[in-house]
Image (cartoon, rainbow, N blue to C red):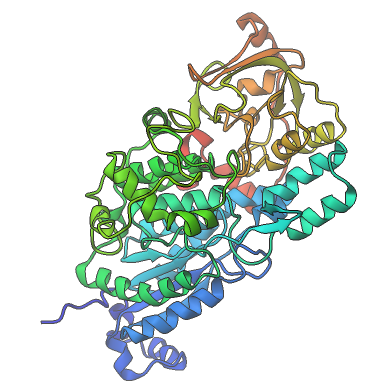
Length: 561
């Protein structure tokens, strides 16, 4: 007997007492014979105001045609997205991280309300990917993620460009390293078309991790946005969603502690974004899996950095596709070397090991991926730091290029804007620790990314001469001696709120500590005089976010109650 796969949609289509619902389904183009077919929600983060997302509707349409060929019903819908690149350094960036929760909530709402039997999600930009993953875990129905793919590189004056090139160009222009004409040409040529930002920034970090975790088909993370491979993936995904429906494999069967570790290990090996921490804490929470900051540090101690990828390296995701042969080649290498676990089930219905059987072996006649016996860094670039400045933890992104220990006098700013102005006006001296505070989950609100200041620092030639700490977070494009996610944040009375100019701060990425060198008695005196500033917003979504969001050390989730 053929197994029923319309386990949810039958609650509407097979229910005789819902004539209005049936009438509306007929209006969508369904025929009577279609009422016994499984329904697939095809959700994309399409909107045409962001290159990361502007092509997703085309991919969704290709997937819908493929779904119909498998005798399934596909219904397209969209959810929101926020462009980090466009909003970076503005008050609009406050909405970036909170958009992750809206994405998850909206997908959960539509799929539960309309009883779809399975979901194919098509994310593009940074918060899209964890947002859809959180939703799929809440729903726990057969699901596959199809990544929108990475952008092609820009090109100017003999050099490859990407989005961070444009940010760093401003710092170079302001220090007279390039002309106004060169600056404008870099900006004009950094983003040549559709796709997510090209380096191992947050979108590509999360896509790579989710492929290793088993929630994407092999090659999904590394197939470029406009490649023939991406079109083929959109055609073939329907075969696998039908297989998942028939077998009954759901996201919580795929997302286990072991598969989460696979995702984090791959991302660490490639030099991925610190946003990985926030998103995987939230993903683990949605899957009811115990995974904490200490797990990230344990993994970072175990996994060498082997990816020579931007921002700290020089290559882009398209180079993995063109010169390595795609992400599965790297995954297979790490599997064979015992870094990854191969027995985790994936969306193909097979284990990760089985998926990699026919994948070519990596060769090292290229400079993108180093062998484990000759890594860029012997352990991970992400360090979880504790100390009086961050008793609940903070996250450092330190590749070793800027050193591993930094001690300097504090230069304190109560907003990103103030810090940016100081850097661009050449008021930052070598040897200082720049402190940007009141930009955490509540204080920001929304924990905005500090890509502008880190890019300006690098563009100004200060990358090895200053450090930056914040209760905000960093873009995947950030690099340098930087520490974010300092918890507790300033708005809730964390010690970062009490730092004064000229205080000495020591950041030690060898012993994983961050210390404000001020006597306890003086700290208590400052604490007695401190009171929290007024919230920056008093109504609307961001106000709701402030009232419900957890700390960065818990993933900034809003459904913890």
